[in-house]
Length: 552
Ligand code: G6Q
Image 1 (cartoon, rainbow, N blue to C red):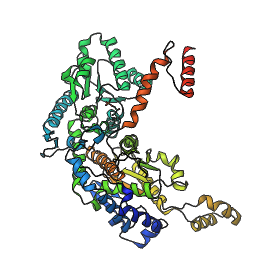
Image 2 (cartoon, rainbow, N blue to C red):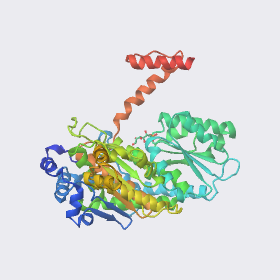
Image 3 (cartoon, rainbow, N blue to C red):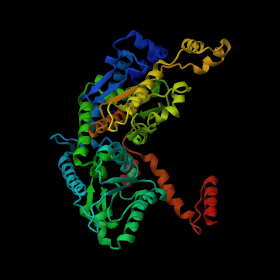
Image 4 (cartoon, rainbow, N blue to C red):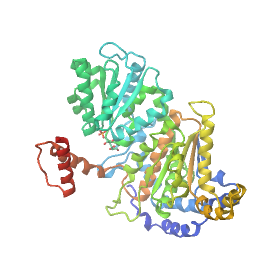
């Protein structure tokens, strides 16, 4: 049975509250000065590829010990086993969340309800390999006999964010003949822009939808289908230009996609964990099956680490506990993720879904309202851009914002000394957040610039940086498929650990349903002679305004 512990009722929680009062005023500057071994102790290498430095956090050894005890009291080891045993950890939807099986490249069986799912996982992977190779080798031909040179993935949420982010990150591995685009928003602007530059003879559409009923995806898919048929003129040509990735064979057939062009996955794959499944097919065609498999392998290695490493040296566990430390004891409300890598531009958006859709919950596993805060608001942009935008708030704002800095030591784009400059900034920011700048330092600096005493008095409060602002630094050798896979799995497991400790269900997303239901009800009301359903006066007034604006 999955543990159900009210974290605030544990002995460790109580001790952490006391501990917080004792250490909250310690400054990291002093902790580093007094302890030359701090970096050694508070950093972990992952397979010589990724270095996770968590030493710039407001913790001492006792903090880490108490946080680990909290994890134990909340039944974390047992919860990890439940996840890997394929138990129905997604309890409100009555199924497993078994994405770890999708990247199980070992020969170990992985069972759901006693049945080994690995044969079917391998079968789909083999189909993905064959298909992607034929597209990349130019053997898969469009209806006029030309090879495919443009891939368009149509999907949204989990059927978009993962593949879109991965394709961007792995662009250096992309096939030189092939470009890839993603369409998710139901706003016609997105599909129009992609279709404008598409050639029907060489474009391949991937309709990615677990349910194959999602309004946005189906609307975009129908528009793409019509656009294609207006040009190709024959329904039989659809088979060469449309593939589907879904769990719903019946609906895929009804759409007119040849079932042989369908790639399945299973209900135990959650949408936001589905890039590891056939939902990753567009990426696989773009970067090649071997690269896709390297990404699975990186994730698999992180899975093994998460399952087997001691909690004290377990990277996802430590990242989760540090986040809980700030969220629940310091009252931090947000968390920033700043990749110093332009290719990772969509990484924060991908993580927003992974974290906020998983842990943005207020009902506990006991069905009561949580009296502690759950998922922080996650946000971020690539560095160095962020430095010239919101970093002011990180350095001097009234809020505490823990930051994850990520960067590759080596770049795919060795242009001049760009990368060294990027890395210097990456290091400078976490150092600046931590050490800050004292009043004395500011005074000395201003005096050396010849400023008057009066000016110094006026300026120093504005120029002082208190520092002591926490961050994790996640440094990796290079943004390879393996590293990316490992980083994604690291965050997935971090989020899982948080859900266990917050005693919430991380694998459902009931909160998004109401809006979908209401949108369906409102849609006909927007028509000129549409029905008038009762609404609050604001919604009513807005509907009427839209009708009149559209009418005119
Ligand atoms: C993810 C969510 C959600 C889902 C989309 C798309 O965990 O379930 O983001 O991925 O709503 O759903 P379909 O794949 O069914 O179109």
